Image (cartoon, rainbow, N blue to C red):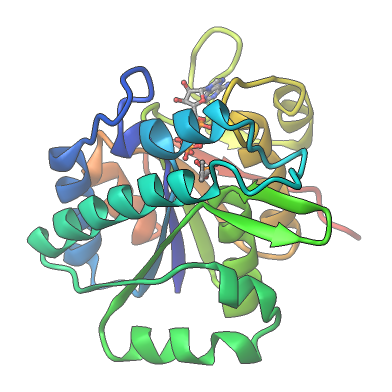
Amino acid sequence: MTVVKLGGSIITDKGVDFSYRDEAVRSIGRAIASTGEKVVIVHGGGSFGHPIAKKFHLSSSKPRRSSEGVSETRRAMFDLDARVCDSLLAAGLEPYAFSPYPLLAQAGRKGSAWLRAMLVAGLTPVTFGDVVHSKEGFRIISGDTISLSLCESLGATRCIFVMDVDGILDRDGKVISTLDEEDANRLMGLTSSDATGGIALKVKEALKMAASGTEVAFVSGFRPRELSKALKRVRFHGTIVRVPSRD
Ligand code: ATP
Ligand code: IP8
C-alpha cells in the first residue's frame, strides 16, 4: 500500500491564486490506475488553501483562538478536492473523498480499518491538508503531516511525494538521487512563505517516515511515467531517502 502526496505545487500553479491543473492531475491519475497499486491520495493546498490561510493568519506553527477564516480556508480546500476527485474519476480511478480530521483524532491502526476496507473494495481514498482544532486553537495541518500519520496507521510500504520539480534539488538545482541526513539537515533550514513550511516540513516528515521503515520517494508530477516507475518500485528519475541504519 502506498500513500501518494499530491503537492499543491503540481495540482495548482502556486504563483496564481485558484489555478487548477486538470490535465496534470488526470495524467497522474492515469499513471496510478495503470499500475493497479493500492493507493491513498493526500493533496495539499496549493494556490487554493494557502492564500486564504495566509490572509487570515492561519498556519501550522501558531494556533489561533479566533475561528476567523476557518470556514473560508476549508471551503477553498473542499473546492480544490472536488476538482482533484473529478480529474481522478476521469482518469479511471474511483476516488473516495474524506476529511482527515476524524482519522487523526483516532490515532492507531484500529481507527483506519474502514480505510483498508475502501482499498480492498477497489476505491482510492482521497484526503487533504485541513484546518484542525486543539486546546490551543485552530491551526493548519499540512498534507505532508497527514501523509506521515497515514503511513503509520496503515503501515504503508511507501510514500511518494509528487511535486512540480524532479525531486529534491541540490544547491545547483540538480536532482539528489539519494537524500541522506546531511542533505536533509541543510534543507530543513529553508524557510517558506506558505502556511505550512514548504520543502523543509516535507523533508522533516519524510525523514520520520523513512526512520520508521517506509520507503520515501520524490518525483515530478509532470513526468507520469517516472511516477509509474516509482509506484512499481523500479528505477525512476527522482529522489529516494536514505536514513542511517540504527545498528
Ligand atoms: P503544498 O504545500 O501546497 O501542498 P507542495 O507539497 O508541492 O505544495 P511545497 O511546499 O510547495 O510543496 O514545496 C515544493 C516546492 O519547493 C517546489 O515547487 C520547489 O520549487 C520548492 N523548493 C525549494 N527548495 C527546493 C529543493 N531544494 N528541492 C526541491 N524543491 C524545492
Ligand atoms: O499544502 C495545507 O496543506 P499542504 C492545507 O499539504 C491548507 O501543506 C489548508 C492550506
